[in-house]
Length: 221
Image 1 (cartoon, rainbow, N blue to C red):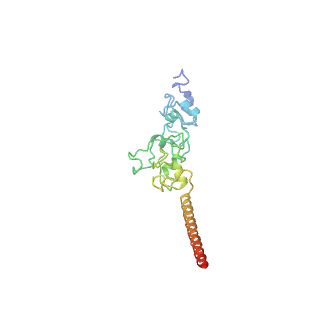
Image 2: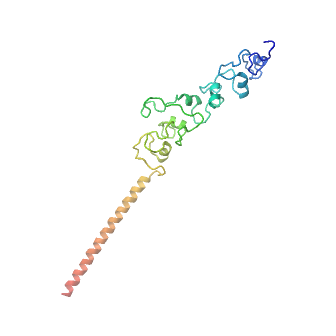
Image 3: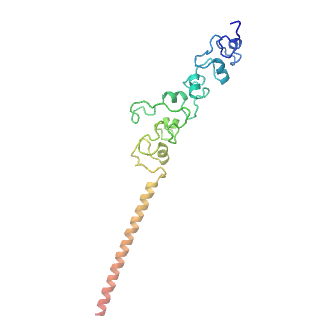
């Protein structure tokens, strides 16, 4: 429109759109307020630092407009820094249980792209999905207790128990350190041995006392 400096009303003049003067030399469409159809006007994208010619600036699988709505950063593929891209978190495409053992329906569900530890178990979503803290065995980022044994995944990993096996080795206390079971067994064994030794000593002393009495009686005769 020769009478309107900003034909599409996107906040960028027609001249700047044609030359790309406001967009690192990349032209935008002066007849469309949203050149890349991502739900954000060209002018707003330029202000926000996103690319008005690319619907998904950071390449995380979410359009810039959607990221703006949910609060993730359209210029960072992994807003919360947990090792999973925003798109994978929102769409739930990283299934940590492909065999369905702990996730029968085969759908892991989406995780929170704004929270690095969605289930609050002390293990980041990324580490749960990859099993990075559990010898390569993934845990459920949407459940703080994957094997339902009453101990959080993070605590099991710290204690050296398997967060995927409810019977390994039998629900250690959250605050119980590694080797505590072995130490307790050893202490019980030592205590038992001490009691037996004391009992034997008492019996020997009793027999000795009886022997002395018998000897004295014979001597008096």
